[in-house]
Length: 368
Image (tube, rainbow, N blue to C red; front, side):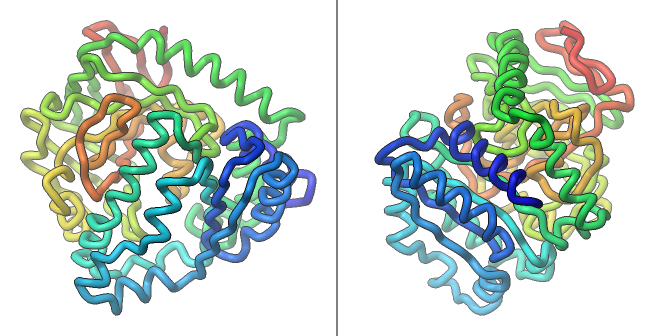
């Protein structure tokens, strides 16, 4: 990415997504050194805005070594600095730039589960403070060869894909995302007040109780790029069956052809044709892992292909995704879990969505 694009990218993240202002404590987390150009520009803009930025950089291989060598006590340990940061930061900006997407693919699933359970309070605190408006945060990526390879693209093609997905190719990306926000708000306002969401499609006939839950429109405030509308269903109200045809990636492992059945809000039967052992370990992580934490509709029409990166894949226009595990307080969700696995389903092949028995979506498009 050239300097003008990096400047434009950082400007959106600082001045639109997180609205950094004077006096803010801003913690910039970078996974991988390749993100340096973007992190430097973000840091500069935070200073210009009068904020107090702190940079945290993690090296590739550290997480892999931790899971490999840590004992149970170490897996359960959460350092005090991490607690202080999530309790006091005004803004958190996460930039991913991995050199190896599959570094955790052979990691011990049981140890991963223990670590996820231990770190859940950190995630829960961030979501809680965000829901209250006490903290702003955003997750974004910087292009690397690893991300390009996972997406089956050249590095240059992946850069172009990221730029297009984020609307960084337009003269004023912030203005474009504000236009997207207006349309997202319109759809969310129509869905607000819905009691039952019914989704049908390939091997799928499932209903979600969404009574008194909030539909959240997403347009670049917490994820970048963005493009989804989501809620957290009533915890005991999911009934039926659903099939996910896209590859489902989590912690560097992949499960394919995932099929799940629900009764009274809980998974009663589930399997994956490929990667089933890992899938079973994750959905048995804790008591909340078999409950739906999120149901969402992807709306970013510039993202059309699965890349293996959930930040992009869950936004695919013409898709839905359903997360098992932790729900979102701002949507009214109450489920807690160390898991939040977004599972993506193609809806362009005859899929339909009904809101209180009214058809609102068909073949990957809203018709409202």
